[in-house]
Length: 544
Length: 88
Image (cartoon, rainbow over all chains, first blue to last red):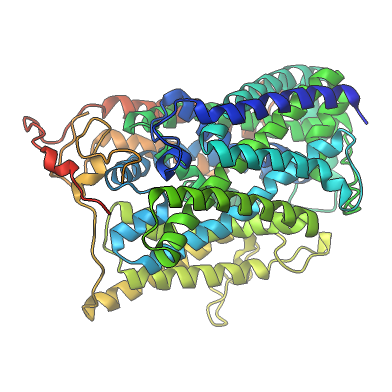
């Protein structure tokens, strides 16, 4: 047991717990019994709060432990996280402000609300809502993987069910203050999280490379390690076969990120269009941190860091690489700060994700199918309870199911959420696609994507299915015809599935238009997409 | 920012700058070790250099398209009635 680390960690954890409960009274609206208030923090966050909130939301604990772990294990391919988070902002800059405006005029709380308003189809909205919930659940579970990596590094590495007790306690506390304070809790805690992360990373990237002979030495060490492995795809540079995978994974991840309901929650909670635009300029500051953090995977190679064996599964857990690196090379008190940064880094996104999933459940399932005339107060109550269910579901997942399963599901989740792009993102610009086309495209893209992922095996780790998202082009077959021959060049599955989705959507749309099938009623007006905070057309918050 | 209720799409040529960071996806341009900078292979520092470049592009689009209504000289004439969307 590492007492100094544990004490520093606990003190900081206690601080954010108090903040979480106090947050209910921070920038308080008239009532917390409304989704605008509980689920979107009153829709009035300014530039700074949004920067911390969205930054805390997108750059999660799992990212902070998994990306360096990937660099440690596979080399340059793990660095895709940097291009991913650089191209992200220019891609979403224009669509996000349109989404904000139309949501503000009509009071939409979730992306599925928008789809329902745009196409007048609650079935299409249900499809989008379910995709969002299913894709978000494993993401929450993964935050626990990050948190647990830290707890186990501090010596809380028990076996069996009891070994998960510290994790369980941390999550009960999180669940309680999220229940009480809603989105304001993670918004306030994000300040602490981000400041700690910045502090730790800046110290780490100055102190650690110096300790191990500078970056040049560190890269040479890494190259020597990868040269010694049987795998041909690792190394400090990309190889001939994984360059396309690198680029398409970065692009696919960037397209997918703001389709996740929790990312949109942060955007819809902001006060106005300029707040969002300023954030698109300022958020890459986190990308810089993420890129530097990724390089710590190579530092760990030079430092000879060994992943610790998870007593619950009996296997070495590569996600403990960064906590172990910090634990062995920093003084204990600072290692405690670093662990707290990662641990609190798990709480912020977990809270936002559970709120986003709860909003989807409440708005697009509960209100739509179970209790049509629910009052705003009943909606808020339902969402609070749903957020508890979602969080305990995630804990149960980690405790009773192999964590590896969450990691697989997260991989699947990225491919799934990408299939909502035509209905959510393209619909922001045009209603050209027919609602039948969107549904057919979703089914085709989802089915094909899942089938491809199922068939990706990795003999090296003894897995026959769901072993990764890199698909050799030669494996793509159209009824037995292989358009790319036996090519071993890899591509990201999500992009292939999205292509199939769009293709089917276009074909079915053309047929439906020729057959003159009714395409639903559009509740939105072209001018809705440009309305800003000072317009009289924005819907009053928390009144409808 | 004045909101123009008429047009569906607004376009400014400055928006084209948003495409520049996508050049980062052309991996053959930078998948090399030399020259190194502070010990970092070219592959890494080249991509780090795209962070400020991305900020510059998005920042320019933000500044240049701010407060630029497509149709000028038309005051916002929306009345109080537009606020009244009825109780649901």
